[in-house]
Image: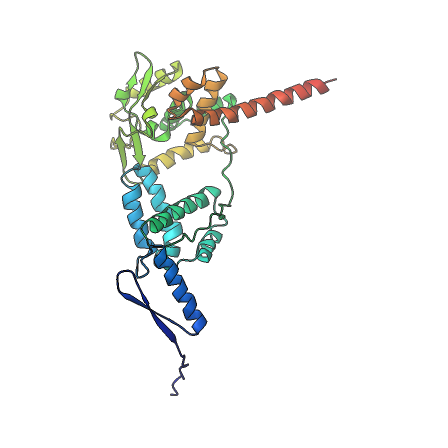
Length: 353
C-alpha cells in the first residue's frame, strides 16, 4: 500500500518572554503569521492575561454559577439558569479554551437560537456577558467576544391580558374539578402567586377574620415539592382579605381535608409539577380559545383592584410587589385598555345617527 506523502512545512518560531520568567513558544507558517501571533501575545500580556491558561469555558461557567449565583438565588431561579447553561450555551462552548472563543462563535450560537423566544435569547446573552466579564476580571481574557452590538431577537411574549369579569365567572362556573376550582378561586380572589397558592397551609387561613396570611412558598418539582417560608420577596409576606365566596368555599374544603396543605397528592404530600399540570388541563379545557396561566389569573386580580378604585400603594401591598414600579406596569396595561375602550365608545357615539 502506498503511503500518503506528507506536506513539508517550514515553520518560523520564536520564544516570547513572559512576566513570570517562563517562555511561550510560538510558530507560524509564514513570518507574517508568526509576527501576528507574537503581537497578540504581547497585547494579552500587557492586559494582564495569563496567556498559558488552559481554562475552558465550561469550567469557568461552573465556577461562575457556584460562586456568583448559587449563594444568592432561590432554587427556582437557579433551575432557570441551569437550563439555559445546559441546553443552550455549554453544548456549543463548554469544551473550548476561553482564549480560543471568537466573536464569530458567539454570533453563530445566537444565530442558532434565531427561532427561539426573545426571552430565551436575552437570558443567553445576559449569562454569556456575565461569564466573560468574570473571565476578564480574573485575567483569563483581555476582551469579551460578546459584542455590545449583539441584541436578542426572536418572538416577544404575548402581552399578558387580564380576563374579563365575564370570562372569570364563566371559568368558575364550568370548572368542576375540586382542586382546579379551589386554585382558580384563590388566584382570582387574592392574586397570590402560583408557589404561594401551592404552598398554602390550612393554618395560614383565618376563617374568623376572613384573612389569608401569605407565609409559605412552594418550590414545585416533577417528583417532589418543597414548602418553605422563603417567599419571593420580603413584600411577599402579607395578609390578604378573602371574599365571602372564597371563605365559604375554603371552609367547606377544610372539612374534607386530610393534610395540613390545601393542595395535596393522595398521600397528603404537597402537589408536584406533574399533578399541577394535570389540574391545569381541567382549567384550560374550559376556555380553549383564551390563553390562561397562573400569572394571568394574578394579573386579573390586580386589574380588578384598579377597577375597584384602590390606590397604588394598597394594590402593591396586596400583590406582594417589592417596588411600586412593578404595580405600575400592570396599571399601565389596564389604563391603556381602559382608554381604548372609552375611545371606541366615544367614536361609536359620535357616529351614531
